[in-house]
Image 1 (spheres, rainbow, N blue to C red):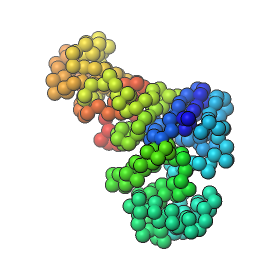
Image 2 (cartoon, rainbow, N blue to C red; image 1 turned 120 degrees about the vertical axis):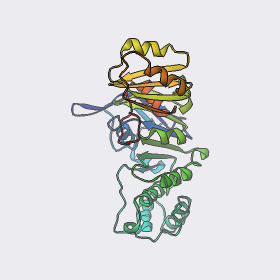
Image 3 (cartoon, rainbow, N blue to C red; image 1 turned 180 degrees about the horizontal axis):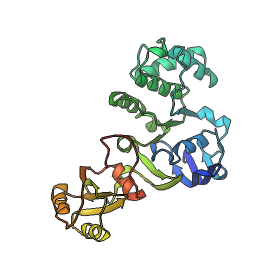
Image 4 (cartoon, helix red, strand yellow; image 1 turned 45 degrees about the horizontal axis):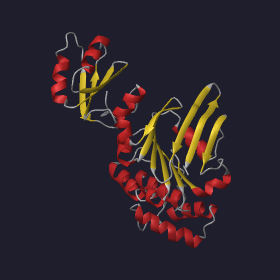
Length: 311
C-alpha cells in the first residue's frame, strides 16, 4: 500500500493555484523528497496530507483513507517555523504533545529521553527551551514529532538555517525509520542535501510535479560533471553545436544561464571560450547533482539565497 496517493489535486487561494492537477505516489518505507523553490506547492501539499486543508478538486489518499483527524495519530509533523513554547522546558513541550496523542506522563518521559539521546540531546529533557540554540530547538521539534511513534513523518524545510553538524545529527537519527516500514516526507529546496538522504523524490514547479523517481533515475542521462555558465547572449546555433560534442550529455538554457552535463569539464570549457563571439561571463564546475537534474527536467535553475550556489 502506498503511503500517499494524489491524483489531479487542485488547491486554490483566490486567483492563485497552489496546486494545479498535482499527481504523485509516495511509497511506504522510504525518505521521499518534495523538491522545489518557495511557492512550488510543497507546504500546500503537506497541509493537505495532514488534513489541515482540503483540496478543491482531485483525490488524495493517505494509507488508503481520506485525510481526517483520526489519521493524525499516525502522523508526526515538523513545521517550517518553530512552534516550541520558549517559556517551558523541553520535557514540558514533549509532555503536552504526547498527552494529545494519548501517552501517559511516564511514557512521554521515557520515550522523550530515548529520542533526545538519539538526536544528540541527552540530558536535555529538563533544560529550558530558551537556553537552546536554534539547531537544538529544531532537533527537539523532531523528537516531538516522533514521540508517539507515527507511521508517517512530514518535515517542512526541517534543516533551514542550522549548521551542517546539526543537519547531520537530524538525518543520522532519521535514517533507520524507513527500514521499519515508516515513511518520511521532506519538503526542501536544498537539493544537495536531498541528494544524500532521499530514497526517491519529486521535482515541483508552480504547483505541478515535473518529474519523479530515485535520485539516480532523475539524474539518468546526465554526464559525470555539470558546467554552469553565465552566458547572457548564447545563440541557439552555438548551443546546438555544443550539444553535438561527443562528451556533452545535455544542454539547458534559461534567462542567461546555460547548464551542460559533460564527461570531462577540463576538455569542454576551453572549447566553449573558443566559440566566436561567445560572451561567457562566469563558469562553475561540480559533480552532477539533483540540482543539475532539476534544471534539466524543469528548465529553470533552483532559486535560493546561497551565495555559493550555481549562477
